[in-house]
Image (cartoon, rainbow, N blue to C red; front, side):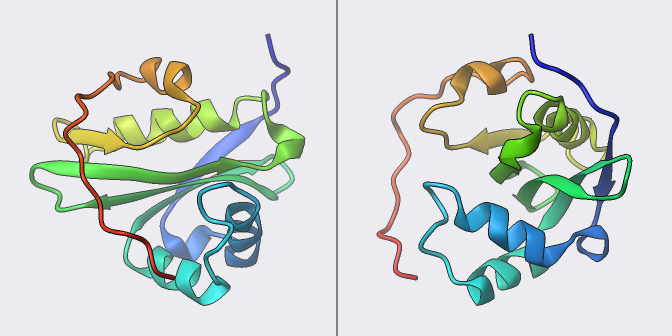
Length: 137
């Protein structure tokens, strides 16, 4: 069982510490090749969720891409290493799955190693039917 800290979730790009988000994402296996400019552009076109400690520091982030009618894609979920296990990831997922604009929509995501975590929030393993184009950042 991990330790817990007081975490609040804020929604909207205007609440994000964009430099912190860029730093956290560039430390991940999936976004390390993205430029800061690319990350900033992606944030402008997404529904952004941030996890914040009681002192106001941003310690987590999640991004949703959606049509607000049928489905949403959950991506770029990241928690600062200093707060992993403290509840920030769970707070983010509760906010995403409970968001009124996303309720009832099909949520999809891709993960290499966090399947058990996402199952706790209603995600199930999908069929191997997804395809993709090569990424060229």
